[in-house]
Image 1 (cartoon, helix red, strand yellow):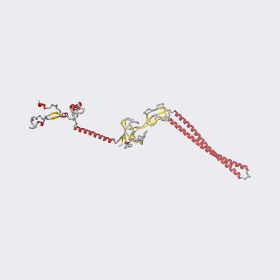
Image 2 (cartoon, rainbow, N blue to C red):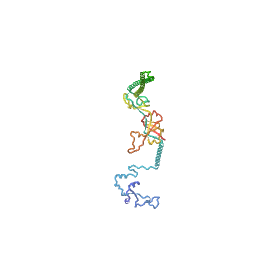
Image 3 (tube, helix red, strand yellow):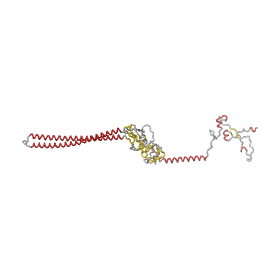
Image 4 (cartoon, rainbow, N blue to C red):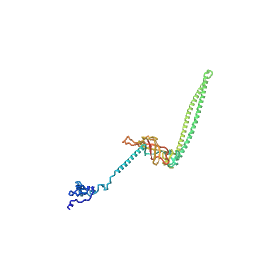
Length: 435
């Protein structure tokens, strides 16, 4: 009993980590002698040196470590966890093997190399093109408006109907303008009659001038005769003629001279009357031309009552109805022309290598399966902001540089496929080959 009292109290078998965690130590008792050596051992070697008996003793806790009886339930519960457990109590996974690490690194490097290669190939491909999403179909849109005020009596087209240039679209009531045309024609006839009368007066005046000139010649002849008689009487001896005869001859000569002056004055008056008659003829001719203009204007106003298509295209946005009273400038409908193109707003940094004539591939959002071939036609002489209603004033306030966009006109190489219906406003994605 005394020998058993010297032995420590038996403890449960624990593995090494658990012994270390609980603070147990291994000690060899000093009062136990070495047993006899087993067969095969070297004589004289104590068995304790080969395999000393194990005695488990509880190690004293460290000064700064709390005693087991002083620990809280949570700390005691944490002490029951194994060193291989995680904080949440689950078992820690074993470390990855070297082969798996090498495999994962190889796969990562291959993926990285593939991404770099794909990026380089994409850059080499993309550097040959310039594209933008800020593009749309553009075209000629003609707003149809009346030029005279009248009531609509007929409409010969419907929405989205295809028309040709000159086709009738709307018919207005033209009776008022027909009356104006008839009045103008009557005034022209009256003016033409006045012209004929003026021309006849001109001919009469010319005859009067000829008559006056003839009368001058007669008067001059009489004057010559009277002058000759007077000279004859004065050259004869005074005893051969009487004084009365000489006086009569002198009076006759004076009278003949006066008649010559009167005839000449009549010629001058007739010539002046001829000038006035010619002016009257010119005035009648001008009035006739004015009458012709009035007729042309009346015909034009009457023609405006028939509104026709200004170009080939389709009728859109029809707002007029039969019976409406319309005024000049009022929008009735619009005709969208068949000639379409693309207006692409490229950034100014994309225009370095872009030139007119370069090929373009256009994809329309409305029919993405159709790729249309086109080419660069021209560039607008100014950015979009320059022609805006409120252009930028960079000289005032703080300046923030903004990349500008330049509208670029792109025309189609051929008429697009009818299966892909195009009209102004559709969004497109052009791609210009610049290299």
